[in-house]
Length: 602
Image (cartoon, rainbow, N blue to C red; front, side, top):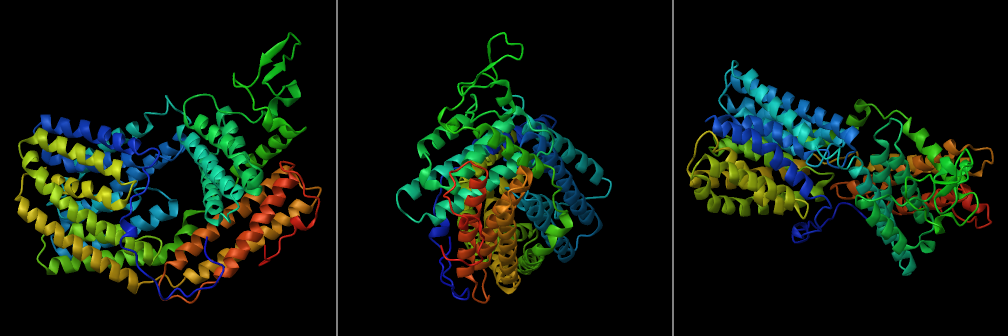
């Protein structure tokens, strides 16, 4: 969390070493890595057998769609993957038709830059990612500089569509084995984050960062659980109860048991039975805390929780099951809310889209001026830089340059092996695909070490080319794309960032006042209280993301950091009050906790 002291955003130190620091690998790093190999291998090997490996770039465009939506529930993943494939085909179609109609490099670079801007804006607005727009931009930009005729376009699009359909099947393949895998992982991450928040509070530390991370993890878990709006399954209802428990911890972290939270997280992450905190729907049937209830016909005890024993400690207060049932009523009410239309989410992304269009176009033009025949790599490099703010964009530029320079050295070492024959080339491409997705979670530059030789090997599918020329051209294009792209980001700063923070503060204030009124009203329904609480929680998460993004922008007036911190603290107290209002925590016996005070000191 930011300091409570307002600071100017004009003077910033741009990180270098910190940008290259390795992090922990993703919990599911192997899933996209294995998925992309499974999606790329069959089409490429089939084309190799047919002697048409020159067509593999088109099938690879569809196969790379398997990288998307691994954090989505399978019902939502099916839709997201379908839209990604359609988006890829749309960008590819524009690129292939443009390449068929003109060979003017300036025109093609302009088309590529506009495509990159549209792809970034749509991916950011719909939160499709990782890898977001970068793969789509790579596919469309590369296709712009492949000689094409209009008669060939339908066939090439058909190959990409067929490979995309195969990628869809690969992405959905785990569903029969682990139908709730993504939801389980998101819930486990929320429980782990809540445990870390509780441990910090027990240690007497302020724990602002841990609390902010915990709120973000819980918010992400709800997004995963609520993205599917049909009637929830029994498993998803059990996961929702665990996320509710994580929310309770955030209201009173010092009273929580981190060991139990981590134990729940481990159990949820696996394939075993989900730890249950109670089944509200079964309480009327005489359910006892040990998970044994009376049969409706009075014939004796029966299991009513699917075979899982309930947690005795979590049911130590009378009426706890009814309260959780009320929580789930609120969840159902939130699931029924219609998401905001896409058009309303695109407006705030205008600066990012302008940055992408300008930076990609200028990078391509400069690359052309330096004699490049296919400047798409400079364009893709510029497109890959643009993050939420200037500071993050600089970090990505450092990562991209370092990763690409090391990557061209790796390509120089791998090229002699790849040139042994078509099979060796395909195997090298598969190895680079796996390495890129396995390593990119540690740091972007580490993944780029494999992405660079992968891109260079793909250019050799139609025929082998001199290694020295490929290496030299890639180094120049990388440096040009990173430098020009970053300069464009500096020139097109997000001057609306300060206004976004003010708007986010206003949203938090209004959501907090509404939640306080609802919590203080004895006649409030469970659905109304849950809707108010979730609205305030979402507003707090959005405020932190907006403030962090604005803090990394240059040439901005001083941000109201103190107001941000105090608004967060007041919102956290109100969230705790709403939890107490539901009876999930003991009421401290004061009415002041139900009052939302804007800018109040803790």
